[in-house]
Image (cartoon, rainbow, N blue to C red; front, side, top):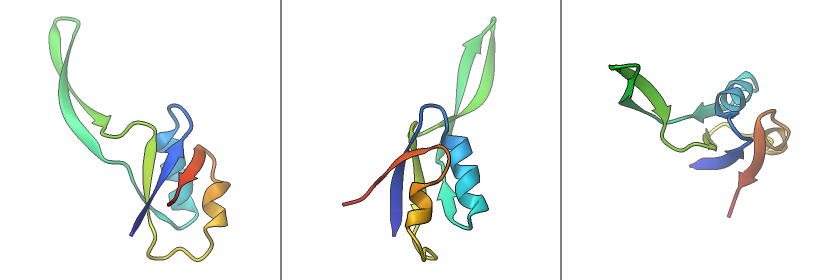
Amino acid sequence: MWLIAKTKPNQEKRAKFNLENQGFTAYLPTISCKKYKQNTWKSTNELLFKGYVFINTRNIENIAKIHNTLGLSKLLVD
């Protein structure tokens, strides 16, 4: 099962880094695309869901640690 967490603006990579340092498995899906800049096409990787990070719940013992992670705004739970 996966949890979804809302991140602070432009802090998805920071939140993923901090979650992984705490021992969680975090996932930020990306998509490769091409953008036309300065008369050339450049390949880039962009986040598929900006503002969200996915957290695997297999090894979660204490969910309170997620709430206090730097870069996260709130945890979306049902």
